[in-house]
Amino acid sequence: MVRTLSESIKTALTIAGSDCSGGAGIQADLKTFAANGVYGMSVITALTAQNTTGVYGIKNTEPEFVKKQIDCVFTDIRPDSVKIGMAGSSETIDVISQVLAFYSAKNIVVDPVMVSTAGTKLLDRDSVSVLTKKLFPLATLVTPNIPEAEIICGLKITKPADMEKAAAFIYEVFGCSVLIKGGHLTKTADDFLLTEGKEEWLYSERIDNPNTHGTGCTLSSAISANLSLGYSLMESVKNAKAYITGAIKSMMCLGKGSGPLNHLWNINTAR
Image 1 (cartoon, helix red, strand yellow):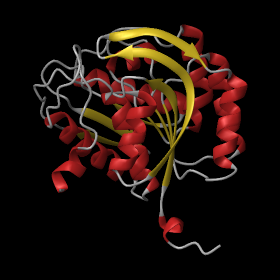
Image 2 (spheres, helix red, strand yellow; image 1 turned 30 degrees about the vertical axis):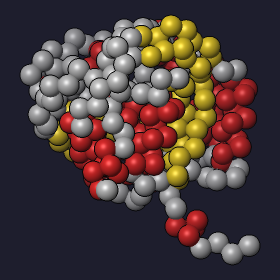
Image 3 (cartoon, one colour; image 1 turned 90 degrees about the vertical axis):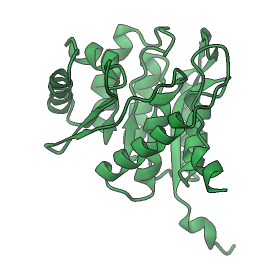
Image 4 (tube, one colour; image 1 turned 90 degrees about the horizontal axis):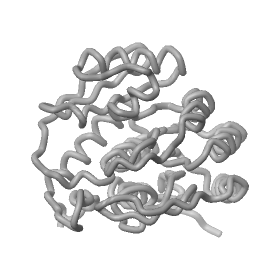
């Protein structure tokens, strides 16, 4: 078989939960991968019954079946990057960490999904402990928002200096680069990146748009896509932040609650 075009296609894998309303989770990740020019694959860790108004049910995938999905991907189409979102349970997190270590997976972006936008708890305390101890050390980057960073560090974050302290804690304790997302700040949406001892604030305006369902999933998968394309971590974060800013600015309005982003804004704009 002659392979030409396919050899140049970059790939990315998302390991996350399904959002039947399409705004977050696997569905948001796959759309983001496509919009950023990479071939997306998925491993589903949980089914959720949710929409823009909340999460109404969760059914976790059996850990052994999660492993089987990852095996199928890595033994056939090896991903250039891996994004990990909602993991479901401590047993599943343990399996994911073991399998990714076995395959020496590269460019791992961990979005530590702990609480939904609507406030539903998605990860218990034991699972948080396993997540930080088993997956964080494998990660190229972890991307907690402020409430998640508070849980991980045990710190109250109310100002930019607190974000810097939290990032330093995660970097020193778990040995991975960290992006603290500042979307929960009241006046700005600035993010703080700490990588290999280098610190950088990524400044951006706060966009007056209540439709922010799936922003965390979208940002982490956009970073993953850019890593697949060969950009440095710093470049990948900056490119991803520009992409998600455009998706929010698109002002798409769907649903009765906090609606989803327009993941295809850059494609539609180009037409």
